[in-house]
Amino acid sequence: MVWLARYNEAQVIAGLARATVMMGVPTFYTRLLEDTAFTRERAAHMRLFISGSAPLLPSTFEAFEARTGMRILERYGMSEAVILTSNPLHGERIAGSVGFPLPGVDLRIEGGATGVIQVRGPSVFTGYWRMPDKTREEFTGDGFFITGDVGHQDPDGRVWISGRAKDLIISGGFNVYPKEVELVIDELDGVAESAVIGAPHPDFGEAVVAVVQGAGEEAAIIAAARAKLAAFKTPKRVFFVDDLPRNAMGKVQKNLLRDRYAKTFSR
Image 1: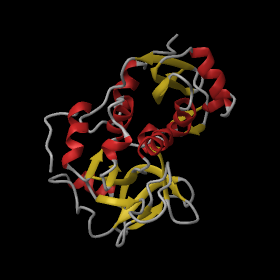
Image 2: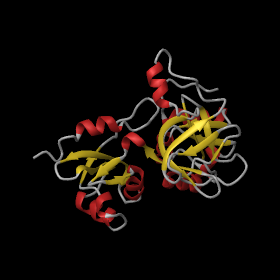
Image 3: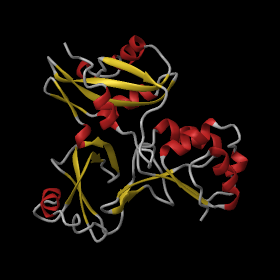
Protein backbone atom coordinates (compact mmCIF):
# COMPACT_ATOMS: atom_id res chain seq x y z
CA MET A 1 0.00 0.00 0.00
CA VAL A 2 1.18 3.50 -0.83
CA TRP A 3 0.36 5.88 2.02
CA LEU A 4 0.13 9.66 1.52
CA ALA A 5 -0.28 12.22 4.30
CA ARG A 6 -3.07 13.92 2.33
CA TYR A 7 -4.53 13.96 -1.14
CA ASN A 8 -2.28 15.69 -3.65
CA GLU A 9 -2.67 15.17 -7.40
CA ALA A 10 1.05 15.23 -8.16
CA GLN A 11 1.84 12.69 -5.44
CA VAL A 12 -1.05 10.45 -6.50
CA ILE A 13 0.02 10.53 -10.14
CA ALA A 14 3.59 9.71 -9.14
CA GLY A 15 2.37 6.95 -6.83
CA LEU A 16 0.41 5.24 -9.59
CA ALA A 17 3.68 3.84 -10.91
CA ARG A 18 3.99 1.81 -7.69
CA ALA A 19 0.39 0.55 -7.61
CA THR A 20 -2.13 -1.50 -9.56
CA VAL A 21 -5.36 -0.53 -7.74
CA MET A 22 -6.60 2.88 -6.60
CA MET A 23 -9.48 3.36 -4.19
CA GLY A 24 -10.82 6.89 -3.94
CA VAL A 25 -13.76 9.20 -3.48
CA PRO A 26 -15.23 10.99 -6.53
CA THR A 27 -13.38 14.21 -5.73
CA PHE A 28 -10.06 12.41 -6.22
CA TYR A 29 -11.05 11.50 -9.75
CA THR A 30 -12.37 14.94 -10.72
CA ARG A 31 -9.12 16.50 -9.53
CA LEU A 32 -7.04 13.96 -11.41
CA LEU A 33 -8.95 14.80 -14.58
CA GLU A 34 -8.18 18.51 -14.06
CA ASP A 35 -4.43 17.73 -14.09
CA THR A 36 -2.93 17.45 -17.57
CA ALA A 37 -0.16 15.25 -16.14
CA PHE A 38 -2.74 12.50 -15.61
CA THR A 39 -2.57 10.81 -18.99
CA ARG A 40 -3.63 7.51 -20.51
CA GLU A 41 0.00 6.38 -20.29
CA ARG A 42 0.12 7.08 -16.54
CA ALA A 43 -2.88 4.81 -15.98
CA ALA A 44 -2.07 2.14 -18.56
CA HIS A 45 -0.61 -0.41 -16.11
CA MET A 46 -3.38 0.01 -13.51
CA ARG A 47 -5.69 -2.94 -12.98
CA LEU A 48 -8.60 -1.21 -11.26
CA PHE A 49 -9.92 2.19 -10.19
CA ILE A 50 -12.61 2.05 -7.47
CA SER A 51 -14.91 4.83 -6.26
CA GLY A 52 -17.10 5.02 -3.18
CA SER A 53 -18.22 7.08 -0.14
CA ALA A 54 -20.14 9.59 -2.31
CA PRO A 55 -22.01 9.53 -5.63
CA LEU A 56 -19.82 9.42 -8.74
CA LEU A 57 -21.26 11.69 -11.42
CA PRO A 58 -21.89 10.02 -14.79
CA SER A 59 -19.96 12.88 -16.41
CA THR A 60 -16.89 12.00 -14.30
CA PHE A 61 -17.28 8.33 -15.18
CA GLU A 62 -17.43 9.16 -18.88
CA ALA A 63 -14.59 11.69 -18.81
CA PHE A 64 -12.37 9.22 -16.96
CA GLU A 65 -13.04 6.51 -19.52
CA ALA A 66 -12.32 8.93 -22.36
CA ARG A 67 -9.01 9.93 -20.76
CA THR A 68 -7.76 6.50 -19.66
CA GLY A 69 -9.76 3.91 -21.56
CA MET A 70 -10.77 2.41 -18.19
CA ARG A 71 -14.13 2.37 -16.42
CA ILE A 72 -14.21 3.25 -12.73
CA LEU A 73 -15.82 0.55 -10.59
CA GLU A 74 -18.36 2.19 -8.28
CA ARG A 75 -19.65 0.40 -5.20
CA TYR A 76 -21.75 1.19 -2.14
CA GLY A 77 -21.04 0.57 1.51
CA MET A 78 -21.07 2.12 4.95
CA SER A 79 -19.30 1.75 8.28
CA GLU A 80 -22.21 -0.22 9.75
CA ALA A 81 -22.22 -2.85 7.03
CA VAL A 82 -18.93 -2.71 5.05
CA ILE A 83 -19.51 -3.18 1.29
CA LEU A 84 -23.10 -3.90 0.28
CA THR A 85 -23.28 -3.59 -3.50
CA SER A 86 -20.82 -3.31 -6.34
CA ASN A 87 -20.60 -3.02 -10.07
CA PRO A 88 -19.01 -6.20 -11.42
CA LEU A 89 -15.27 -6.69 -11.70
CA HIS A 90 -15.90 -8.68 -14.87
CA GLY A 91 -19.00 -7.33 -16.59
CA GLU A 92 -20.72 -4.10 -17.46
CA ARG A 93 -20.18 -1.14 -15.15
CA ILE A 94 -22.98 1.39 -15.56
CA ALA A 95 -22.54 5.06 -14.72
CA GLY A 96 -24.88 6.18 -11.95
CA SER A 97 -25.52 2.69 -10.56
CA VAL A 98 -23.75 1.19 -7.55
CA GLY A 99 -24.27 -2.29 -8.96
CA PHE A 100 -25.67 -5.49 -7.51
CA PRO A 101 -26.00 -6.65 -3.88
CA LEU A 102 -23.04 -8.81 -2.92
CA PRO A 103 -23.56 -12.52 -2.20
CA GLY A 104 -25.10 -12.94 1.26
CA VAL A 105 -26.55 -9.42 1.34
CA ASP A 106 -30.34 -9.18 1.56
CA LEU A 107 -31.40 -5.78 0.23
CA ARG A 108 -34.89 -4.38 -0.03
CA ILE A 109 -36.51 -1.02 -0.69
CA GLU A 110 -39.01 0.31 1.83
CA GLY A 111 -42.25 0.86 -0.02
CA GLY A 112 -41.25 -1.32 -2.96
CA ALA A 113 -40.39 1.32 -5.60
CA THR A 114 -38.20 4.26 -4.57
CA GLY A 115 -37.62 4.35 -0.84
CA VAL A 116 -35.14 3.85 1.97
CA ILE A 117 -32.68 1.00 1.42
CA GLN A 118 -32.72 -1.71 4.09
CA VAL A 119 -30.08 -4.44 4.37
CA ARG A 120 -29.47 -7.66 6.27
CA GLY A 121 -26.52 -10.04 6.20
CA PRO A 122 -23.38 -11.29 7.96
CA SER A 123 -21.44 -8.07 7.34
CA VAL A 124 -24.05 -5.86 9.03
CA PHE A 125 -23.13 -4.75 12.53
CA THR A 126 -25.20 -5.82 15.54
CA GLY A 127 -25.71 -2.35 17.01
CA TYR A 128 -24.26 0.94 18.19
CA TRP A 129 -21.89 0.71 21.16
CA ARG A 130 -23.78 1.43 24.39
CA MET A 131 -26.66 3.05 22.47
CA PRO A 132 -29.53 0.55 22.74
CA ASP A 133 -32.25 3.10 21.94
CA LYS A 134 -30.55 4.21 18.73
CA THR A 135 -29.94 0.57 17.79
CA ARG A 136 -33.64 -0.25 18.15
CA GLU A 137 -34.56 2.77 16.01
CA GLU A 138 -32.20 1.77 13.20
CA PHE A 139 -33.33 -1.87 12.81
CA THR A 140 -36.66 -3.24 11.63
CA GLY A 141 -38.51 -5.93 13.56
CA ASP A 142 -37.24 -8.64 11.20
CA GLY A 143 -33.59 -7.62 11.50
CA PHE A 144 -32.98 -5.29 8.54
CA PHE A 145 -30.72 -2.28 9.09
CA ILE A 146 -32.26 0.99 7.91
CA THR A 147 -29.46 2.64 5.95
CA GLY A 148 -31.02 6.08 5.55
CA ASP A 149 -30.12 6.04 1.85
CA VAL A 150 -32.94 6.39 -0.67
CA GLY A 151 -32.85 4.41 -3.90
CA HIS A 152 -34.41 1.78 -6.12
CA GLN A 153 -33.56 -1.45 -7.91
CA ASP A 154 -34.06 -1.80 -11.64
CA PRO A 155 -35.48 -4.98 -13.24
CA ASP A 156 -31.95 -6.41 -13.54
CA GLY A 157 -31.37 -6.01 -9.80
CA ARG A 158 -28.94 -3.10 -10.01
CA VAL A 159 -29.17 -0.55 -7.22
CA TRP A 160 -29.48 3.18 -7.91
CA ILE A 161 -29.16 5.65 -5.05
CA SER A 162 -31.14 8.91 -5.06
CA GLY A 163 -29.66 10.42 -1.90
CA ARG A 164 -30.02 10.45 1.87
CA ALA A 165 -33.49 10.36 3.42
CA LYS A 166 -32.51 13.26 5.68
CA ASP A 167 -31.67 15.31 2.57
CA LEU A 168 -35.16 14.83 1.11
CA ILE A 169 -36.82 18.18 0.39
CA ILE A 170 -40.59 18.50 0.83
CA SER A 171 -41.72 21.57 -1.09
CA GLY A 172 -45.40 22.39 -1.16
CA GLY A 173 -46.18 18.80 -0.21
CA PHE A 174 -44.10 17.32 -3.04
CA ASN A 175 -40.99 15.21 -2.52
CA VAL A 176 -37.79 16.42 -4.17
CA TYR A 177 -34.75 14.14 -4.26
CA PRO A 178 -31.67 16.40 -4.49
CA LYS A 179 -29.66 14.07 -6.71
CA GLU A 180 -32.21 14.34 -9.54
CA VAL A 181 -31.76 18.12 -9.56
CA GLU A 182 -27.98 17.91 -9.14
CA LEU A 183 -27.64 15.65 -12.17
CA VAL A 184 -29.33 18.28 -14.34
CA ILE A 185 -27.25 21.18 -13.00
CA ASP A 186 -23.95 19.28 -13.11
CA GLU A 187 -24.27 18.85 -16.86
CA LEU A 188 -24.30 22.61 -17.48
CA ASP A 189 -21.24 24.42 -18.80
CA GLY A 190 -19.12 26.01 -16.10
CA VAL A 191 -20.49 23.82 -13.30
CA ALA A 192 -17.92 21.66 -11.55
CA GLU A 193 -20.36 20.25 -9.00
CA SER A 194 -23.60 21.24 -7.31
CA ALA A 195 -25.27 20.53 -3.99
CA VAL A 196 -29.04 20.88 -3.72
CA ILE A 197 -30.63 21.54 -0.34
CA GLY A 198 -33.95 22.61 1.11
CA ALA A 199 -34.29 25.98 2.83
CA PRO A 200 -37.23 27.07 4.98
CA HIS A 201 -39.85 28.91 2.91
CA PRO A 202 -42.89 30.79 4.25
CA ASP A 203 -45.24 29.48 1.55
CA PHE A 204 -43.89 26.06 0.55
CA GLY A 205 -42.45 24.87 3.84
CA GLU A 206 -39.16 24.23 2.05
CA ALA A 207 -37.84 25.51 -1.24
CA VAL A 208 -35.11 24.10 -3.45
CA VAL A 209 -31.75 25.88 -3.31
CA ALA A 210 -28.73 24.99 -5.45
CA VAL A 211 -25.19 25.71 -4.32
CA VAL A 212 -22.84 25.57 -7.29
CA GLN A 213 -19.10 25.15 -7.37
CA GLY A 214 -18.14 26.82 -10.61
CA ALA A 215 -19.31 29.72 -12.70
CA GLY A 216 -22.52 30.82 -14.39
CA GLU A 217 -25.58 32.99 -14.00
CA GLU A 218 -28.35 32.25 -11.54
CA ALA A 219 -31.16 32.97 -14.01
CA ALA A 220 -29.60 30.78 -16.70
CA ILE A 221 -29.20 27.81 -14.36
CA ILE A 222 -32.78 28.14 -13.11
CA ALA A 223 -34.06 28.30 -16.68
CA ALA A 224 -32.02 25.27 -17.77
CA ALA A 225 -33.27 23.27 -14.78
CA ARG A 226 -36.87 24.28 -15.43
CA ALA A 227 -36.58 23.00 -19.01
CA LYS A 228 -35.97 19.48 -17.67
CA LEU A 229 -37.66 19.45 -14.26
CA ALA A 230 -41.09 20.09 -12.80
CA ALA A 231 -41.59 23.54 -11.31
CA PHE A 232 -41.52 22.29 -7.70
CA LYS A 233 -38.11 20.62 -8.33
CA THR A 234 -36.56 23.69 -9.95
CA PRO A 235 -34.23 25.74 -7.70
CA LYS A 236 -35.69 29.03 -6.58
CA ARG A 237 -32.23 30.36 -5.76
CA VAL A 238 -28.71 29.50 -6.94
CA PHE A 239 -25.57 30.44 -5.02
CA PHE A 240 -22.01 30.17 -6.31
CA VAL A 241 -19.05 29.09 -4.15
CA ASP A 242 -15.37 28.43 -4.75
CA ASP A 243 -15.53 25.11 -2.91
CA LEU A 244 -18.26 22.95 -1.39
CA PRO A 245 -17.69 22.00 2.28
CA ARG A 246 -16.56 18.38 2.60
CA ASN A 247 -15.68 15.96 5.35
CA ALA A 248 -12.49 13.92 5.50
CA MET A 249 -13.98 11.33 3.13
CA GLY A 250 -14.78 13.92 0.49
CA LYS A 251 -18.55 13.92 1.05
CA VAL A 252 -20.33 17.25 0.72
CA GLN A 253 -21.57 18.39 4.14
CA LYS A 254 -25.09 19.48 3.29
CA ASN A 255 -25.90 20.13 6.94
CA LEU A 256 -23.43 23.04 6.85
CA LEU A 257 -25.02 24.35 3.66
CA ARG A 258 -28.50 24.11 5.18
CA ASP A 259 -27.29 26.19 8.14
CA ARG A 260 -25.56 28.72 5.87
CA TYR A 261 -28.60 29.33 3.65
CA ALA A 262 -31.34 28.81 6.24
CA LYS A 263 -32.53 32.42 6.02
CA THR A 264 -32.59 32.66 2.22
CA PHE A 265 -36.36 33.15 2.10
CA SER A 266 -36.88 34.92 5.41
CA ARG A 267 -39.32 37.80 5.19
